[in-house]
Image (cartoon, rainbow, N blue to C red):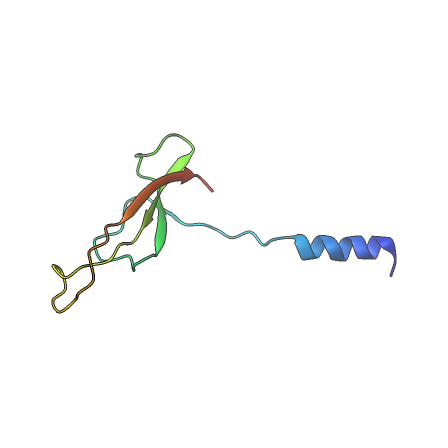
Length: 82
């Protein structure tokens, strides 16, 4: 193989496909996110150039009878806009 062919093949191996990231306008309703699932929300609560990352929590015994799991609230953080 020529050096040019090797360079083209190597460049193709390191290229990553572009993945579209959906950014919601409002936070999903209670119970709509599974435990550990995350979404990005542009609701104006973060500084310019950032969006809010919401990670689903877990319902506890107070919400689901016969469950011994503790309630874990949703986690919120501001992250750079993708």
